[in-house]
Length: 189
Image (cartoon, rainbow, N blue to C red; front, side, top):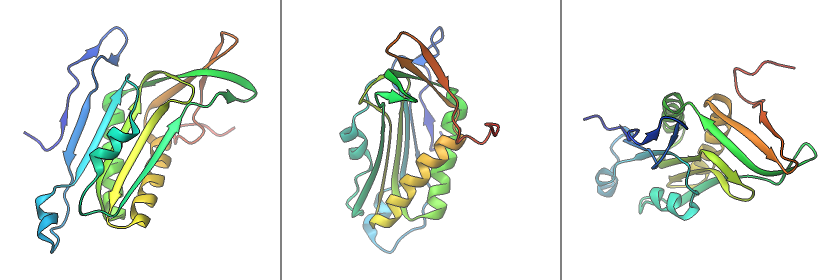
């Protein structure tokens, strides 16, 4: 069994959305430290796509470590306006196999750049009402600079590379798929 498991057996084929949250959890390779406690606790990369409401507390708890003095979070929420229109919700879709793979690459890149302990990336799919979280990224590290930089890198890179699409639902019963200007495959205007 590999150190990375993907639970994708619960997908509703008609909607292509998970009925129960698929969870991807793996252990990242990390050099052995001199502290014995560090050897006992393996680093974790936790990736989850779900139609359920995201919990900041749940995600935070997954990355807490007694070896770490910092836990940094990014929480992206649905705002109530866009380009002068009143937004009532967002709808997200993703190509899950590729999205999971790209997020694993982001986690690996983070581990090459900064000494972090645990990484969690949770993304909501389906409808996300105003003020609810669409994405939560949490990173723990011994010191704040590493986790803060890692979280910033994670959201910027996710927006640029991960195949997740967003549709804005407006109050006047219309909607619009939004082009992600940050993604690498977007054409310049």
